[in-house]
Image 1 (cartoon, helix red, strand yellow):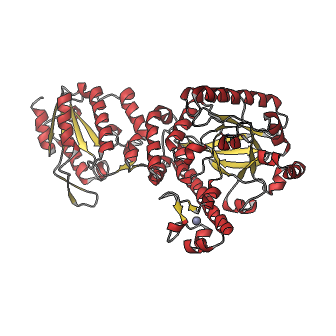
Image 2 (tube, helix red, strand yellow):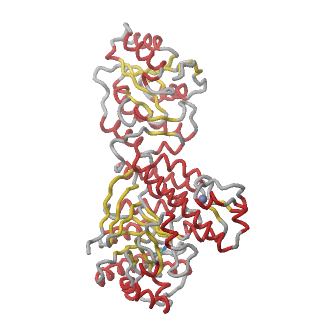
Image 3 (cartoon, rainbow, N blue to C red):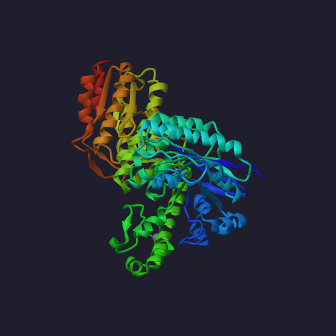
Length: 552
Ligand code: GUN
Ligand code: ZN
């Protein structure tokens, strides 16, 4: 039998599109394993497949404990028992111990691991020791060590070459333990690395802890294997988690939430069925029923239908995410989805601390222009890359003596009638030789963009929320970027002129008033107090040229 393959075909942010091949079955990643009971499910596996499931996760420990099912499955094999021909993964019982705080499982690693090989699992999980949120450091360390030792034992015991293994990574609460767990597990041969012990954080919507854990693992893990996250099943969190490097997840949330009449949405969070007048979704369930009709059905049927809707939404979101990866638009999608819950916004703010890691995986070029439409856009890796480029890889044109800063308007460069006119005035002026003038643009997201870079990717291919109506976060970020430019380059100029027009002509040929309360005025003052360079602002090009003239 061939070994497991995972071929990556595309990526965006830390998200990757890949194809897993095991036992002649294939699975596109990123993907979700719906968790199912080994013998008692509201949704049949053939329905799961219709909804879009290409893989399922079930529990070998439950099978092992039930002598009757155990015998049947040992005889028939798991695939035939579940009547599912996609990829089947099984968990080891560690979750039961973690979730229900059983102090001792009545099972040995050796037995449950061998059992998983015997029932024909494609992906088995070793018997790990999840760290509890309230474990102290010593306890957590012991558990991390036990899991690493079990992983080594598991490798020595493997006999079935059609069974591939999940290597669990633990220690989330303690950075150094998590790092050690990641590095040690990375040295051992597993098909998939799986981040564990996060279910309780996920249930409490502590997305920041989960993202911090994921990014720490990504910093330290080998790059050619998929990363799984146990228990991640809320679709509004998929895009952020995938952008941070999650390739696979498993969850029973779709059915557990359905049991409490909770309906997944991607826009306003999980909703109680009782609160809904109309369904916002157009999956087959939502097309057929309205909320009242569902409420009036008997419990079991209602739960089944809600669980189906929850899964439809989950798989639809995964398709949306994979498409966004192919288009290079994953961050744009994330910025929409995090509006779903404040804790998602909070979690997304962690990106900023991991920009060197994330930027190094960002594509050099994308075929679509970038859209910067939310405060979180300021932490896009491409903006960070531009900052690095200016710092390490940019020189002011040789003869430049006068720095000119023009505001970016509704559209870029010559597409804007006003900018086109300003550039012509500068090019054709007979007072200052053109090569002494260095023209730059003032961009809300990039800071200063020199004219000669302004058409290159991504600076020339972006649209941003309207210039100068900036809010707090964008403003702070901007000031920092402008200061950086001046720190690096102000010494090359003798004067700087900032154009603050009274009005401008937009792309529709309408005259628009330039905002009176604008950041450029403040900036002129701030820069003058901080840098030796003489800085003045004016409302027309000719006055700027006169201002330079006095220095020539
Ligand atoms: N399911 C959810 N969390 C975990 C975990 O930490 N380990 C295992 N084996 N299964 C899980
Ligand atoms: Zn629906």
